[in-house]
Image (cartoon, rainbow, N blue to C red; front, side, top):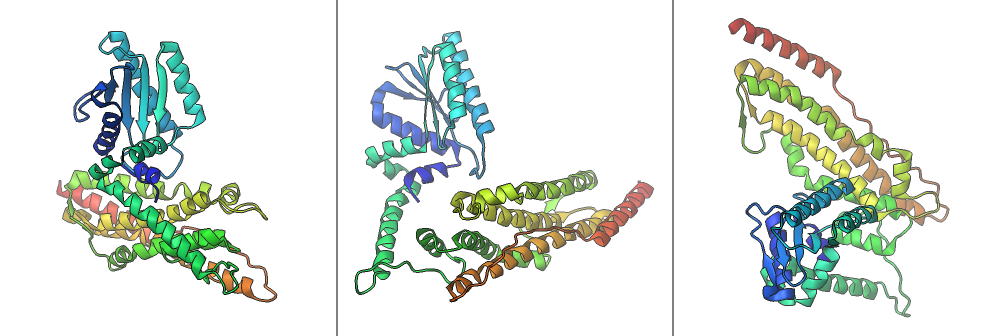
Length: 393
C-alpha cells in the first residue's frame, strides 16, 4: 500500500493533526504556529505568520467506502466559515486559508470553496493525501515519528520484489513472458494482486468472488458463535424500560442494514461494476460491492450476537431470545449467496480453458427472507410479557 493510501486510512483526528503539524514545522520552522487540537480552537489548527495563513485539519473517524462529497463540503464550508468569523472579529490577521485532509476534494466542492474565498478576500487552498505524502517523502526524517507509516517503504519494496519475481517465474526458457492464470477465485491478497496484474478472462467475477471468499473466511469464528447461539463480548444489562426501547429500535436497525441492497443490485450499478458486454469492469466498484455484502453479513451476525448479549428482566427473556433468532434466516440467505457465488465463479477458468468452451451465465441475485412463524411467535410472546408486566405492576 502506497503512502497516500496509508495516510487516507488515518481515523484518529489527533494523530492526523500531529502529522500535519510535523510537516508544517519541517517546512516553515518557527514561522508556523501549531495550535493545541485537544482544546477548543474555533477552527484554527495552525497559523503561518509570514503568509497570514490559517490551517484547518480534518480526517473522518472511520474509513470511508463510498461517496462522501456532502460531508466533505459541509466540513470545509463550516471550517472556512469559522476562519471568516475569526477574521471579522480581528482575532487573527487572515489572508489565506488551507484545509488539510486525508481524502480527495471534488471539482464541485473546489468551485464552491474558492467562490466563498473570493467573496471574503481569503485565498483558499487545500492539501490532500498526495500532497501530504510528497512532503513526508521530502522530509523523510519525520517518518520516525509515525511508525505506522514507515511500513510504506517496506511494502513498496516488497511489491517491487513480488512483481519482479512474478515476471521471472513466468518467463519461459526462450525469453517469452507468460501470465500465470488462477484456476479459481483468489483466496489471498497475493492471489488477488496476481489476478489484477494478469486480468485473465472473467477476472471481474473472480475478483468479486475472491473478496467474498476472503471476507467470509475472516468471519468464521463469529459465524460459529452465531450458529452456537453464544454470547460474544460483555453482556449489556438493561432494566424494563431500557429493554422496551432497545426492542422497539432493534428491528429498524436490522432493516437499515439491508436497505441499500436494492440499489446495489440494480442493473445499472451492476454494469458500472462488472462492465457492459465487451468492456472491462471497475476494480474499485467490484471490491466495494463484494465488501459491502460481507459487511452486511457481519452486521446481521452482530445484530443477533448483540441481542443474545442482553441481560433483561425475566418477563422479557423469552421475547429477547426469539428476537435474536430473527437474524438467523437472513444471515443464512447471505451466507448461501456468498458460497453459491464463489462456487459458480470458481468454474470460470476451467470452462474457459476447454477447447470449445460453453457460455457461462453467472446470476447474482440475493434474496433475503424472514421466518414469518418466528416473527409471529416473537410478537405473541411480547404481548404475553406486556400483559404480565402490566398485571404485576
